[in-house]
Length: 510
Image (cartoon, rainbow, N blue to C red; front, side, top):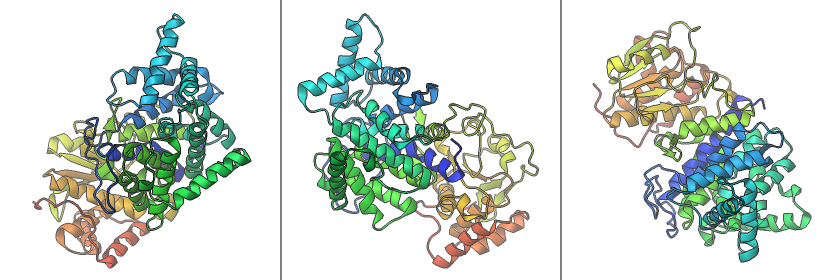
């Protein structure tokens, strides 16, 4: 599907925000609710000993769905036996060594393996999972855990150009691989339809799928949604149950939205979800998938993206690529951004500019050509403001390369969160400098994006206004001419008298 730039951003944000919520909640799992305002960080630990900023089973089970959807060329989409079998085989391999697998999911996987063995097969089929899940439900009458809702988000991205009713049906099939209860299937369908609408329109509308249910079931879910909107996440003490996990996630989004919007809403809602306690990682992951769909990759704070990682050896950038390619519906595109190893700027001139920041000699300002000198100059970290290939910045640890999506355009709608992204990039420079690292800040030619971020950072370093910092920058970068929208951000920052960036103590300017 042909997506516009904002839809691309939102598609890219689904899996990244899901994983961010997951990693944010990992260290608090099974804990009691936290008081309002309590700090929430990606501290890791928790009952299963996750590393800081490591995602858990929620994201790890969503990734095989996303990968199978990319690989599958079947017109039947996610409901094809080939795609579903691809998913369950990866789940089975993952579960053998995973730190944490939900009790119901673990039971179904074990039963599916027994069915395959009884049939004389070494590998499971999707039908084994569906049969095992159905038997689990028949035996226990309790198969409405939250394990299918936590992983369902990738489906929505694969159905952007199809009728929502098809998405609802596909979500039910995917849920039934491990969770056959109608509540679980309907919750997955409703959440997926809401994600689809958010990616396409930017709207947060959890009721979007209600007309696709029977009148009786729509009435049940409508009342559940109303209850969520009258509550806080901490009110849903049984959030291991899919209904209360759904309600907890939506209540976090709704409550935080009463006082915040845009990227601030995304952050506040995920923190609210974690403060709700109990199954914190799953509720925050569920909320994150929908929030990322509404606000995009650019709304996820860099401090969360910087070290976000998990099984199978992936990082935030990998999830961004998966989300964007799923949304486009064209499969893997190894020669195109963002998956390509290199991004070609050979047709651009004047990309080799490289100067020191006038207010901090530990910060270099340059064009994309200056990346070739990172090793030569002993630069420790890079902040990129333009598209790059996966291998365009060699020799740095992933956490030492900060990427920000910002289009050099004065048109308001070409960037989702212009001020947030520009200020976030300046905060990344400050963060690296507080760690004693030298930094290269660059775009393509250091004419608009780079001087804007450099001015925001310089204002903090020198204790002057961003406009005064820009004047100093133009002495060393005579071609620095931020576009009018970026100039507006500088003027608004100067007028606010608020700190441009915060949270890190800047290393002494050289």
